[in-house]
Image 1 (cartoon, protein in one colour):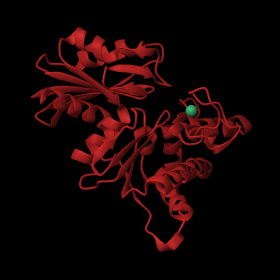
Image 2 (spheres, helix red, strand yellow):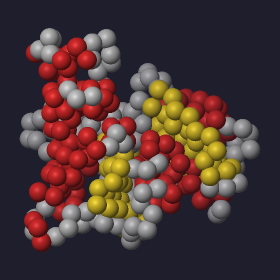
Image 3 (cartoon, helix red, strand yellow):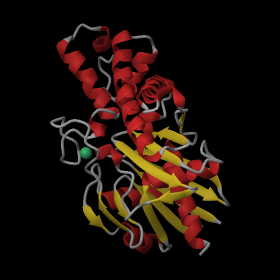
Image 4 (cartoon, rainbow, N blue to C red):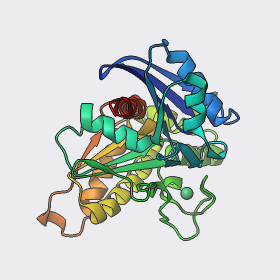
Length: 307
Ligand SMILES: [Zn+2]
């Protein structure tokens, strides 16, 4: 059986083709914010389709109504109440299932990735914002449909303005744009700094700042550590609620690995109530990388064709 999985986040689209549970092709496209959401998905499908697909799965970074295929809203996506499922199904003539992209990514990690064998798992994706997904006793928990949107838990009373329109959300402190903003503040205040020189002529993204940190720049390293610590504080808060066995950190910035995860692990261990008397949850980088959401979406599509 052949299915297609699409994952549309804030700035990138991943597309995979799955044949009998194996990924046979994957593609990554940068999507401009001006591109209409459904058009971006459709062009992703067109790029990767071979014409033999029996269903399409779509993961979206936002509030998704799986039962009728509606994207209610995504803070980094254009449009509200979009009929993604019905529209894509009509364009390509196959059944379409949609889900939150983090739910799809967690499903993929549980079946093929780092979360195999774990039953109580949280996925925290660190990219344009923070996404999340919850598995309880091996099943994805969606609540009324929108569970796991902890990027928008308020961590500061009058913090920075978030893409969601509110202030002080966790993702304003821990995300790619958060790290880029910290770097730009240093560059503006200190145009002759080594960080400014290292990023001269380069797009200042979170990933670029981590690259400079990993090459040994102390200022960049301090900024990356700051974001890692904000991540870790949030993971401690989530652990107080869920006490998971495993936390999987993914997303464009989270997948980079130890430079971000290391400080997060330390803050998590220091912040848990009960201190040394308990073992903190294991924190692992997502194994399937940034394509996890697309792979999980293709798995969800396999599920609908299996009835
Ligand atoms: Zn927010």
